Amino acid sequence: MSFATSAEDEKDGEKIVREMLANDFEPHLTSRQAKYHEKNGRQAFETINRHDDGANMFREFGMTPFWKALRREQRALERGEQSPVLQYPETYLNALVHVNDAEKAALEANDMRMFEDTSQTRRKTMEFLAEHPEYHSVLEDGGKDVHGHAKPGRGKSSFLNVVGTVRNAEINNDTIIWALTLDELEVLPLAPWMTILAPAGVDINAVAKPTAYQLPDVEIDLEDIFRDVVRYTDPIDIFEKVVPGGIYGVLPDPHFRLCEELVNATYISGPEADEPNEITPLRDYAHALLEVRAKRDVFLHRTTLIVDEFGDLVPENPEDNEHDEKDKVNEWPKRYGKLRKKDGSMFAMSHSLSEPTHKVLEKERWFATMPRTPVPSSSRAGLGDVALPSGKPKFLDVGSCFIWDSVNYVEVSWPNPYRRYDFQGQVDISYSGVEVRQ
Image 1: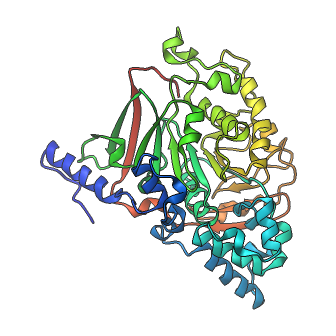
Image 2: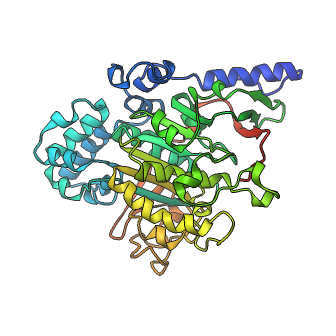
Image 3: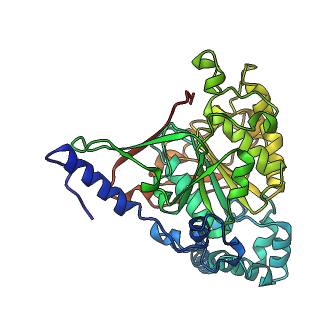
């Protein structure tokens, strides 16, 4: 559906914007996850006999099912053609497929009973892997990680949307949790499937800002874009509200309720601060999310945590300041190690791999370099060997990248998720009545 970008008056312009949003972000309401939140958790999730979000959403992005793509690549390989995805399965397949020890044993025994209750798309992926024992040895159990890097405008957000979320949900049926900030909402392509977890008792303002100068900014409700909005009280409550296979965006709590007790570090909210620079940045809420999922055993279904601007969260030289930034950053690798052991994975994005602390890089195994982005040197502390040749990314188009580890690299591509809708612009979110620091 297309709309004129000129309006005779403000009222007509607002109507156009609202019609765009209603058409572009019509929620998908038939999945297990949608029905669960529609009923506010009054029906046990296990009793809802519907498909999972991840089993269908990839089609909305024009993507071939992963299991079909694998079979196509296998046929090419058997014809003697090139198939880097399967020639170097430890570099791509291992990074994207999440299995625990019991599931890996089932694959090795070609026993599909382990996967009877999972989504069809995951089951078919597992059937392919069970039929090809040559890939079993490279599949590691536990959580995985992919850390991407690029300057703005080179595909970081679309990678996290499509590969980190859509493809991940299709293959693994992970519960996917975006640690959002208020800087810029990067998850609009996912909105029809996403539940926003918003802090209880906090007034939230949302404004749709079209790029077309003829159209006005329009105040909206989060429900005008996202499928659900669920209120939470603290990080533990978040993991008591999520369900297997759900896709969530967490708006951080400006009051940091329970964060100090969980993280064992200082959090200063706006009402507690004497000056604005004393307020703890909202991004630090991610430390509490990691702590709960890694160590508190509240929710143990496969989970992926997605963090953008990762270098700001865990900088190379953290300050020993009133927010205990240094302590938080030093604890991140330890918590992350525990997360992986409990089937927790992570997709992260930084502008450069020089930004995050080397202590985190030492824990990570896969990296993604976006187009026209310098390849980091193996001399960078924490990285180890870098398999990607330095000149490769300059020939890439936006919507593709190289995923690499210490041994090999594989080029992958994905569709542009922003071309699915007519609304061009952004949605700004702010809190009322409480001062925050980004």
